Length: 241
Ligand SMILES: Cc1cc2nc3c(=O)[nH]c(=O)nc-3n(C[C@H](O)[C@H](O)[C@H](O)COP(=O)(O)OP(=O)(O)OC[C@H]3O[C@@H](n4cnc5c(N)ncnc54)[C@H](O)[C@@H]3O)c2cc1C
Image 1 (tube, helix red, strand yellow):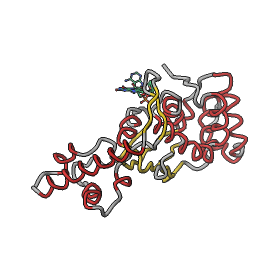
Image 2 (spheres, rainbow, N blue to C red):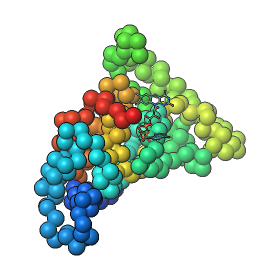
Image 3 (cartoon, rainbow, N blue to C red):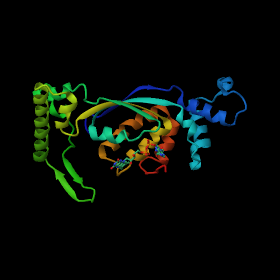
Image 4 (spheres, helix red, strand yellow):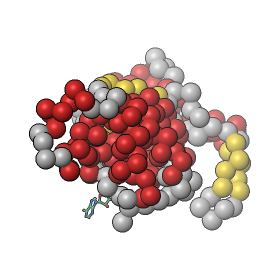
């Protein structure tokens, strides 16, 4: 995996499994469940009950899992990954730099203040297959050519900026996979849906790697649900309609 890829947690709902339990409990309880909160099961037990009553046996009762939220900061991923992840729009929200107003790092790549690989992403050297399964090799020679191309584009961007172009005009000139950071908030259900679609084998490699970095945070936050998810859905391409 690219050494710069990073996912960190900005914030998350505390007691998420108890929160899901509260939603589930209100589905059948006559009482106002807030009044019962002193007798809620602890996080672990709440997680077990959620699995048993909502998820187990593929019941598909996902609604209560929409309450707890996690806010992630995803960093140094290629533009193409950001684009693909942003197609998920139900229960997920994003903020990402548009390069319309600012683009200092491109200028820094052009003048060498920032390393070209810190600003642009290229896949690592190695053996790859195309969509038809045909193998090809990404050699050092080819990768160096591509790095030089990224640098050329950054230099042309810098030239146009120096000629008075706006950032939104000059950004068309740079290599496609400029690295980007984004903030993404999701709930337990929408994050599982994103992983359903993006951790599986035919998703873009970098999307799979993003999921690999998201999963440990998911696991630390909602351990029972993450264990159920890993066993039943992770990488299995179980898609919702
Ligand atoms: C391997 C792969 C390749 C892809 N290739 C392309 C591509 O070439 N070009 C491209 O444009 N996109 C592509 N996509 C994106 C894909 O078409 C979806 O837009 C994307 O995966 C978002 O998933 P989602 O529809 O589940 O959306 P989410 O926003 O995650 O929605 C969650 C769920 O809510 C429901 N839902 C959401 N919106 C609606 C709606 N408007 N009407 C009814 N139900 C809705 C659906 O059940 C949906 O599954 C690709 C995705 C994958 C995984």
